[in-house]
Image (cartoon, rainbow, N blue to C red):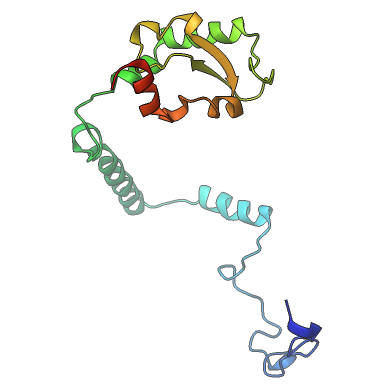
Length: 176
């Protein structure tokens, strides 16, 4: 925003060095490589040109070697060679949360509550919440009575959302 509503220093004036016939590109077409605003049909014509291009044997060999080395690089990052590899271990919690039993538990809790939040009656972004925490009561993990349907906003207000109040819960449950 300009101060005091003044015009810019060159408002309405053309730069005399590059306007008209003094410009080095005056009357010339710009090369395809410089053009930035190509239409979709122009871009497709370049793609189609390359698609139908006949390649000699030497070029094909170079291209296949390049592709092969790229595939080998990808394979070298698999399993043990990946720096994030932890011996093929998946945590017990992840195995439980992705199990069929857990999915059936969620579905049955949603069906019981008619796919609506039990606090605000919303049906947007519903989540299945464990009343007694999943981590502290392993015997109640798949008990339908220990579940309730909450929308995301209501779920965030619970004491056990994302370990919020973990110390409070542990003291309340007599665990620490």
